[in-house]
Length: 101
Picture 1 (tube, rainbow, N blue to C red):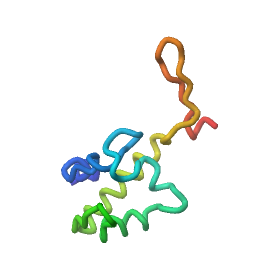
Picture 2: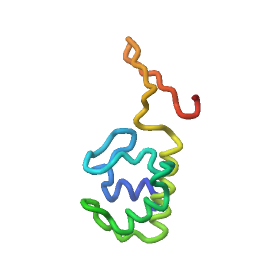
Picture 3: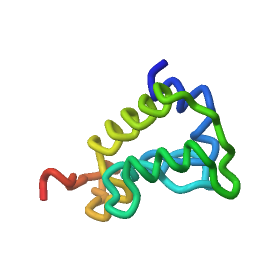
């Protein structure tokens, strides 16, 4: 099963956000993979042991690796929150991505 399928099957979006969309009980995980204070080891530990309101899911190594791959791919696609967003009068939003700086 892919990491995205595991994310959806386990309703991770009920508590966590990606790109600011989802639940608000847990943190936004858009850029957790590249966060210098978090990263893959931190994600593995949280998936294995849970913390406070996050349950222990008892994922296999393959499932954990799949979720890590999913979060790594999400991390590559954008940055949230994006403070370089500019709302245009016609309603469109111009965004400067991390790669364009």
